[in-house]
Length: 473
Image (cartoon, rainbow, N blue to C red; front, side, top):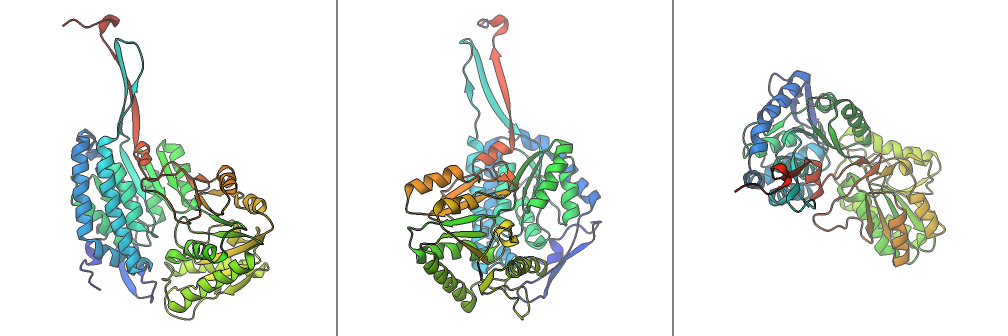
């Protein structure tokens, strides 16, 4: 362990009036540290500071903003190892994966540093003696409320896009990783003018105060319940919302694929980061033609992960209890946990890779987001039946289809009401991609070049000479 930063130096200011938050290492239950939680007055103060800084930052040239964001990326890269270690201690994320998340955050900042200065308007066709065009400008103050499962990479996307387009930002990282979030804010703010990025630590009440405050955008990645509350608050204030919320992503396995390969994809989707990924595989529909071999291979994949200890712990005891409740509900309703399904008798918040068979749509594990290393399986008689079930539900984040049939792939793309359809790879996607979640999964483009559009408003300009003719020389 080489962490050099004292938690007290990255906590909220000492006058914070929202109490405190203690974080325990999910690997063994030991105390990581305690940070102060921002109350309503501190949140309002942070927003006021960002508001005061907004005019000068909006007037800064896009090129200069991009240059400063590149400096922030370099500052983050220099502290990558330290941030990864804090992330591991607070959330249980495996160190290699945590470091990968920090480096992904660096790359995202570098990407937006390049994209921001070339974010352009459009020319419009009007009278031959007039000029019409559009100009994009910042919305003002952005409130960014970010999650714990990939805290640096996700935050860098929202913060980078907001800052480079001329907005100032108040960032509230998840209360499950406040040390990581506060250190991230400190590192990035050191490369920017004062109060362009202000970080507040705190729990749900701090987030609610921020969402209801004097802000122009609320960008949130996290649970659907929180996203709905933010949407209601912004309906009152008029703030623009960008929400990437919960998912119940289906995996549909067609009858013409190699079942061992499909099981590997299912295991990757369900168990990576201990199932704590927004687009994790949450429910599996497998064609009866390959079901027996697929299930056997999936059980082998799960056992291997449990026997080798390749899964990290869940983020905390509260979350583990919620994951196990979904498993227990399924078993009580007739499902079988053929691998895993029990809470280990050891310190920390570990939970095994779990395979649930004989699942039905009325089980919580099939209807809601479990966000843990659980693979619920339902055997279907046809691709059409699986597609119908996969398309049902209140979420609309992403879905994966494993098939050798182009016709079935196209059918799935047309039928699935989600922001992202992945064919033959659970985590496939090109650089620079973006998506719009649907239903309870949110709204707006939460990443990619299109996020720059979410962070700006467009002004239409019509310009012609006085009297409608040619101006005098």
